[in-house]
Image: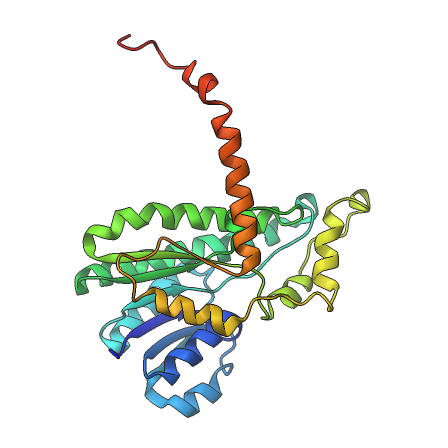
Length: 281
């Protein structure tokens, strides 16, 4: 198996740590970013020079460019960029603070855009590579109480869907990963940083999201190790799959959302055409 080199954001926990562990175990090299300096000391001790890390807050654009350049300098080549760092912000939209809104968009959307922009000149210069962007089924479907999270992920999907064709001439593949619920720390972390519990929304669908995040008996079906294995395996596919759906819940939610949206569009075909100038006019 060819040894590959990966740049992964957010390797302290969740998918990022699981991916790093699997890659190192098979002999690949990883440059990982993290916010907790000592979070992967055990992996460093076990795998030595195969793992290099840097502290990075992906809301800091200047730091992103510095760290990405550092990663390419450290290993000479990076084959795959994985935009993994992110989190969920939930609660009624009007109950969120301006700071919460800005941080969600800066972390989940602006951060991956800037990481990718910083990496592209290097990928072009070396003749190609792959970019993985961690989205969610929430980048295609929505739930009440997750408006800002969805906004960040729908924006993420729009950006990476567009550059899929933009960078293809340079032998750079792009894959948007859409996992469903998985047994990571995502829910507990999200549950600790929700928006204000507004009295006006008592008894509305907003309450459901709070129930899901606080009910420890609701265990997601998704196996992070299996999901990560498929993410890693996707880089072997040529051309790169534009989207990678992981989890039965993800498939169900995306299929339902797309079917409903397509039905609405198809029902408006004649009305849409009625707004055109006549042919030849």
